[in-house]
Length: 275
Image (tube, rainbow, N blue to C red; front, side, top):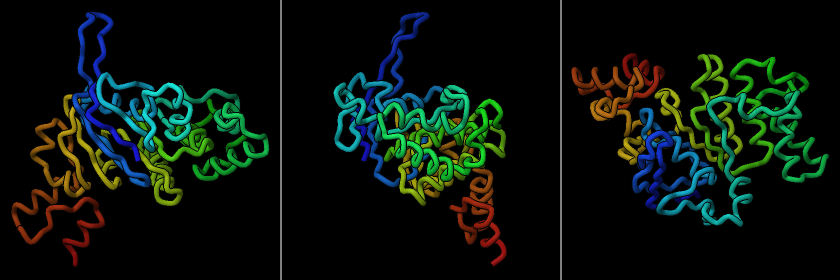
C-alpha cells in the first residue's frame, strides 16, 4: 500500500517569498487494487498530494511510503518511480516521440529492457487502451482523448502497481473524458492496477471505491461515494458541486423518506422510481 503519515508540505511563493502550507498534517492509506478519487476546489492541495506519491515532491514533515519504501530515500527513487506512474493534465507534456509506438516504448527503453520485451510491452499497453490501430500515427494527429490514452499506455508499458491521474480529463471534451475514464476503470478492474484520480468532476468520483475530499491542505471527508455525496450541504459549504442525481435524490428524500437518499446514478434512480 501507499502510506501517507502526518505529511506537511510548505513552499515559498517566488514573488513574495511568503511561505504557503499546501499540505497540513495529512494522513491517508491507499490499498493495493483500490480506485480512489481525490476532490477539492483549486488550491486545496490535491495536486501537491499527488506529486508526493512518486517523490516528485518530498514532505516538509511526515513520511510517504510506497510498499514500505520511504520516498525521501534518494537511493530508492528509481524503485518508487517504477511502482508509481503519473499521468498529468496536459498529454502534450508527456508525449516525446514522432509515432505512437515509439512514444509508448520510451519508458521501457529507459529502463533498459530487452528489445523483444519492449515490443511485447508496447503491444500490450496499446491494446489495453484501445490504441493499437494508431501505433504508426504521429501523436500530434490525435484527438485530446487519444493523446491522453497514449500517455497512459506509456505508463502501463512500465508495469507500475499504482497510477496517479492528476486531473487527466480537465482539458478534454466529454467524448475524450469518457475514453479516459473507461480506460481508467478497465485498468483497475481487469488489470488490478491501483488508481488514484485527482479530479474536480463529480461524475468521475462516483465511479471510485473511495472518495477523499480536501480543503486548505487537509482531508476533511473520506468514504464511499454514497457516504460522501449524501452530505450535500457539507459539500456545498466546501464550494464543491454534487452529482446531479445525488442532489436530486437528496431533494426527493426530503419530500418522501421512502425514496433512498444515497442514489448515485440514473439507473439507480430509474429503479427506485419505477420498481
